[in-house]
Image (cartoon, rainbow, N blue to C red; front, side, top):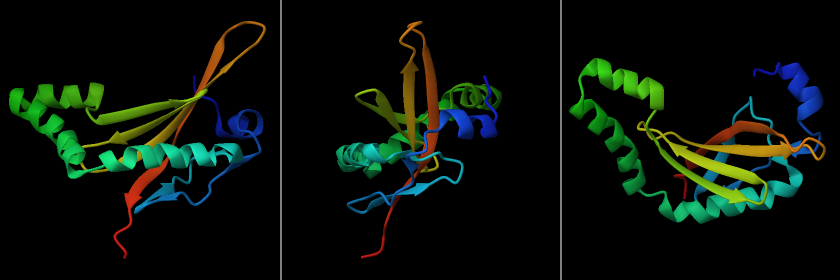
Length: 145
């Protein structure tokens, strides 16, 4: 279901969402302009998620992400490899559930590392859920001393 941006901004995105500077060690989050941000009370959780995964953001993971694509290309013909990439977009994916929120880190074969957020809102009366998910931004390494 596609929800128009105006409807999402008016009714689904709470007013307390912010896009604070998130810096952990040498990593920082470059917010996407299309991102809604996160609730103010979640800033510490997001920083903890990045701090928890930062030790694993080594060349090994980046090489693993590109190895997935190389393996697909080497083991199949070009057409099948393209169909596989289009259908599954092979990548390294790390998720962490923090109470009712799930944060994800995705690494693509070109080295792009994005952070996403997913929340399921459950109706008390109907016991059904509405899943809200969006990409927050790209996690970058600050090479400046």
